[in-house]
Image (cartoon, rainbow, N blue to C red):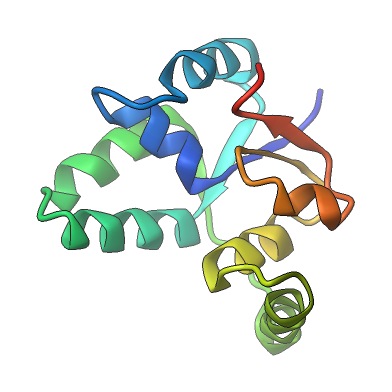
Length: 128
């Protein structure tokens, strides 16, 4: 059994009515449903996106929580410094850099190709 960390774009593809990644996201979800997990960082990012887009954050977070387990791994200051390094070296967003640190040795489900540069095993949301 493998563990798969779900990035925010995976949730958006599943939750939004129309998303260019929806069909692939649904296939991946069906195939790996029992191996998927995410972090509270994803929940925070979804809340910010809901706020920005004037959507109901409660509805989005409740839907996300129904899809898979949500964990709160502790990365400490060292993990945040590692994320800062990724931001500078790979021009990642703070959220993407933290997702990379949080997933540790697990594979990541995402459409973001920057994870490939880090050597992470990525389930390609855009190609499934």
